[in-house]
Image 1 (cartoon, rainbow, N blue to C red):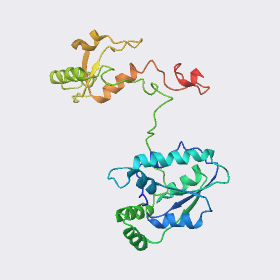
Image 2: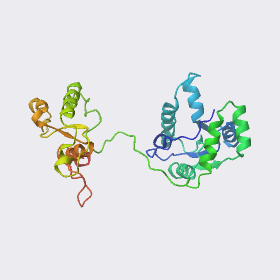
Image 3: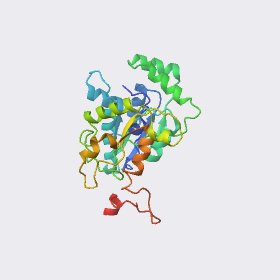
Image 4: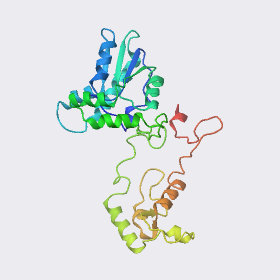
Length: 278
């Protein structure tokens, strides 16, 4: 089985992959067994073939479900290990990569030689159908392949944990531990019943904007990490805000203790930033 075009660029084309120490070939083309056949026919003896579809089959063992995310993780682990592979090793990666930027990505990030195989849509559909592959993967590949903007790299959200900014992973705590559990939800509901409009928008002349959040006028979280429950539960310390005003308030208060940006020397201004602890 060959996996169809992926819409998860962050996982399918991970920017963190190190450069391989061995030769890498990428076989691209409409999904089907012809991609693997090309690799098997052209690879040297002992070469390794990394095929996402094969990894999915190995992990699922015929069980239904969305196995692509865990299979991508396994594939990326194998690709990352190539940084320590012997120089004389040869690896062939099966990746349909219908868009030009995807093929260019493999050539740049893995220093790979890309083989583009396009037998034509009728032949690709016939082969996919014979192999039991859903034809929609083939149609999707040709739709992306024919896209005139296929050379453009789309924006992508970084899905990795943030180690260089904000709190270190694991130290944020649950919503309840941070004071935003069920009781906070009850106070928020009661406040929005009394005051359904954003107080700051009204005060600043932006008219009546529906309120969505309960904001603490004076933060209940103390600098030493403890909570002032009197401030937390005092209705006089509560105000109803829209999401925009609430986020702006947080930027001015809660996150003011962690200065943003860097100095002229390029080092972060936040003294607690990991770079300033080296």
